[in-house]
Image (cartoon, rainbow, N blue to C red):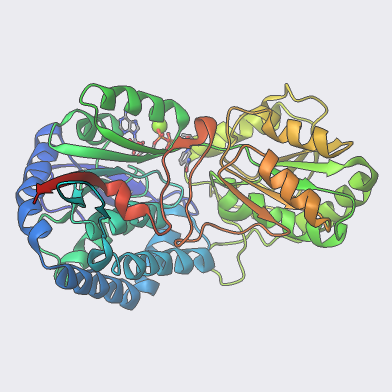
Length: 458
Ligand code: NAP
Ligand code: MG
């Protein structure tokens, strides 16, 4: 089993289907983290100075090596995180795609030439230096790549801390980067605890930016810590997104797609549409059809090609979700396999009050709360009655309404008549307490640079 070459302590890694230990990986100390940051700092100057076309070539080589190892990476994620094999293959492919997309950035980090009297004015996008990326356990590969691909493309070096429970694919990606020819120290995976390694990224002065994805509570702590050094920070936090179904839509189609928008990755998804708002005249039909589609969901061993939902990532996460289920009025559930794994069935709750915990809080498991609404205004106000604002969907055949509601919902990523997943070439991020800053899309490399203005007198 993989262990990091430079750390001494270890922590166990568990398979959530078997609940058995599948390995041990390094858990870095503060001193070991400092050593990794020092190497990244040393590697920064030479990496910044690599010719743009050569940096691009190295990122494409990294993408090609990741692609060659797609099945291996996917199988590791199935064993470590319980992701379905179909999802895990997509996730490894997403790492490749992010690297390829941002490999086009080094030659295109354009500045501006701005008209000024008495000289020439130029802007440059200078890399920041060492970037620290802190990754949660729910999408270990994509979330890592959304940070490291544009950061490396813009000329930064990266230290990356995977979640303690799901470090294996990140460690493998670190090895593949070296295999592809990235110089030592340019991309270093530092496994360990958030309170040790993650905290050190925040306090170490050589780390110039922290990209954090995880809970809102820890995100707030990180933002406070970064304030001390006015350290740049990007936060991708929780969500409580609404799937808004108007009666004028194809109700059968909306009910057939709704389970995938919340139960994908067993609901452990910050974009999960975990509240479904249904216009009252279509409510009974929708809930009836939803029951059919939830009961048909294939909750089976995630290693099987047909699997549509696996277990929770850990016993702690299962227990935390179970507490929400125990406190709610469950309308119906889908199935779950027998056995020891951290399984929960997909669960549908009919909420009667917006005060219910299951309606307000990010459950981060396979639980969805459904509630009726009367009209467009009520739909928007219910959707916005949350501290979060990450994602959401709107189902209607009325184009004007689709646009009014899309503009009215305070959320960073909305889809109409679909539940589109995150695309690497469009911007992603949250309103309100769902985050700060944006990842992905054409502008992501700029978020890993400082804009410098230079005036040259004639
Ligand atoms: P978390 O505590 O926010 O962890 C996210 C990452 O931050 C992990 O790598 C974690 O390290 C690290 N971390 C923890 N404390 C830190 C600190 N003080 N300084 C720096 N880094 C630190 O999330 P969680 O405990 O895994 O999950 C709890 C809840 O957060 C979930 O139930 C869900 O509601 C939410 N969540 C949201 C997302 C999202 O995509 N928005 C992702 C995951 C979780 P460790 O490995 O030590 O934990
Ligand atoms: Mg935590």
